[in-house]
Length: 150
Image (cartoon, rainbow, N blue to C red; front, side, top):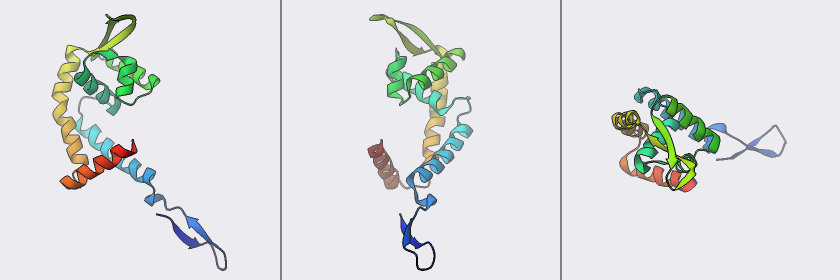
């Protein structure tokens, strides 16, 4: 919401920019709250981007790094770093694509699968706590509205 405020006596009103009323500022504060909850609840040393990758691999099964990046809204450099770190921890592995020998498929290792199974209840609790100040209808509305902004 913008307000007109006089800059000084006899001056033309100027448009005020109130930081706390700006969507970017509000979204950043909400993200900070969510990130704090995530860090506390996800006791497996996974970052939100790493969790996105392993949870999506659980849904899709093996897929190319490029495809996984698209599915998790990560650029090429980000998904490469995420997969490199997960592979170094023994949570993901790569193998040649049987349909295209030039491409590698990323998949979860057994340890990665076990980690996801163990972490899913925590991930659900993170979402629940993040949305706790809202009632059921407000949660539904918020998700719908944010989805329109993607």
